[in-house]
Length: 70
Ligand SMILES: [Zn+2]
Image (cartoon, rainbow, N blue to C red; front, side):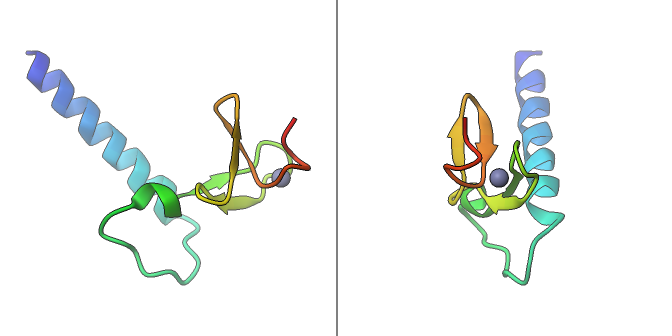
């Protein structure tokens, strides 16, 4: 029962990451690993898409630059 829930959660996260990283993928070949770093996230302030690796995370939200971060 717990395993089933765990599997469901993992699949859910994978689907979320798949769509989150795939929608606005600009000419980059998809990596087999390190999906997190290249996943595009929306800036909370100016709504520009940046990769997780380039973004600034403040309070669990993503920002494109220091100017947008609170
Ligand atoms: Zn911004």
